[in-house]
Image 1 (cartoon, one colour):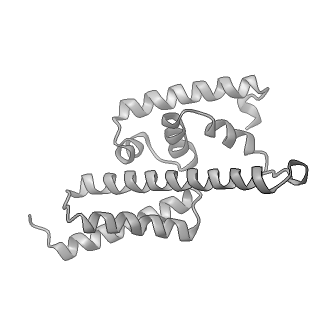
Image 2 (cartoon, rainbow, N blue to C red):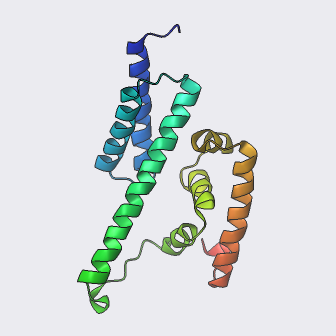
Image 3 (cartoon, rainbow, N blue to C red):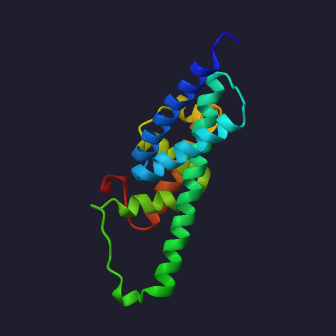
Amino acid sequence: MSIKLDEYEKEVIGIAEEISYYLQKSGATFADSQDIAQDVLVKILEAELVLPFDKLRAWLYRSAVRAYIDKYRRDKHYHEILQREFFASEKVLVYDQDGYEELYQAVADLPTKYQHVIDLYYFQDMSVKEIAHILGYSQSLVKINLYRGRKLLAKNLKEKGYEYENF
């Protein structure tokens, strides 16, 4: 292998910083994005696994996205328990996010495979090729999931009385 380990570690650290930025752009707090990127970085360095850069970046992104989703689910579950156990429903204030809450909720209600591609494509502004690389899918599968996800999203929104023009 022509690359020295020090250079490899520097490259991995650079990718970890990139991942932290991506997670922040996805809605993670600065602290959470740093923690997840650091955990993924430590995992690859402790494994003493040297992957080619094209596979390394994809592996790190997939690992970070999975870790973020796991953390989000744990936090959401914890929040639901708090709401159910400690707050009476009449005291909970309705939270509004500039009219897009319905859209985000509709996307969140989709099957996971559609959520990921729709989020990355529309909300993170990534190309089909980038999404395929990050999620480890073929570009064809990303396109199929985008098509099916959009179709299901439109159907679900229409059932709730919304049209695309509303968003």
